[in-house]
Image (tube, rainbow, N blue to C red; front, side, top):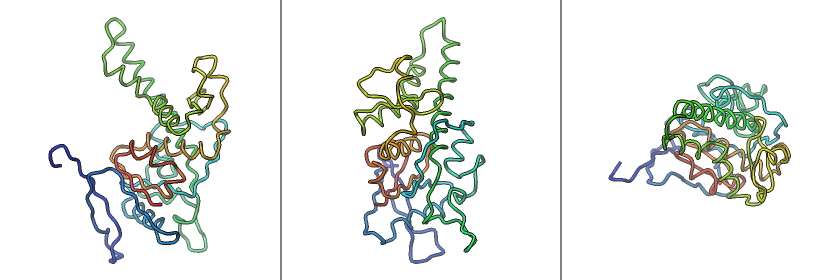
Length: 254
């Protein structure tokens, strides 16, 4: 740290295959790696995820974005773990997110698709519910005096408020919200009330582009602090507009 400047550190592979790579330093929170198709961008992202499994979360370009009409809810910690590791409990690496190839007896971390969209939305809903419970407790204990400004700020920065702002910045014609513990969308011209909340359509009916954006938003909001987010094919995820401003550190390859 030098004055008000905050420096971020990241690693890239070196010619020594057994090393943990060469360290680099930057004063911005995002790094974009550009290269031709087949030049190894995805493999660098996979190397980062494999070499630094506790520090790195990779958002693969090969992802299953189907979403059921009803989300299977669980605790926030279990949902985040399934989003990050493919299991309810934290793992030592991200292997369980990927298909297992019996022919080579290992997980296909480069060529198989990831199916963690539902856990990402479940984590988003769980985080919203947890924040609402916290606000409710604070309001209950301060009902006879003026609410503390921190409580008001917390209410105005709830996960639902954040996803609405981020999503509408990409799709200004659409407003997204949480209803009955799942994601819904409605025309942005309609004001959200208790009545109009029942008039939207289920998140499973979002377009491919809308679901891709929501996928990144959910992970950017729900990932623990101080994680490096590696985004493969950022143009597929609108990541430059959505993810980078809200991540501690972002490394994108595209």
